[in-house]
Length: 186
Image 1: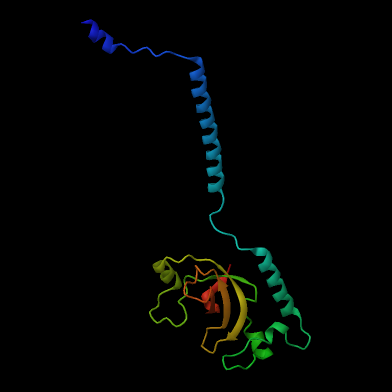
Image 2: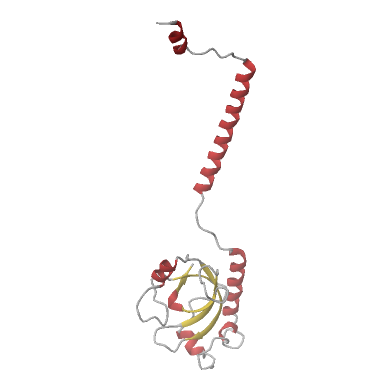
């Protein structure tokens, strides 16, 4: 073997400096600490539920006012039951109100029933199928008021409900009129 071949196989000598090694070790230590902190943050985020909670404080207060109005009975008919009407404009009498009580009151939190067929659809497709097709998320809504008792057999009360506009694209800012059978409690 010649001298040049032996020199090529031997590792070149690198001058070692304790200051350089300390700097590299210090930087590696800092990176390790930062990775540990980042890992803890990721674990904390992943352990939380992945859905958005509705603002319950304001909705609970509205639901309490609705219950109080239903309970108030100064003249035989609760105050909040004077407003609902039939589609022809007549107010709903007490006898009918007692037989067909609304399922939701003003301020109630509701969700769309994804298994229900929206009123007026003749093809039998459910709301869940329609929302999946368009990529629309489901979400919570709040009943603004009870509009009227539907004359259609089995349709029940109709409500004016405010949803997030993402849930009801093409609506008036998320406000829609829905039949009782299309909604379920949140």
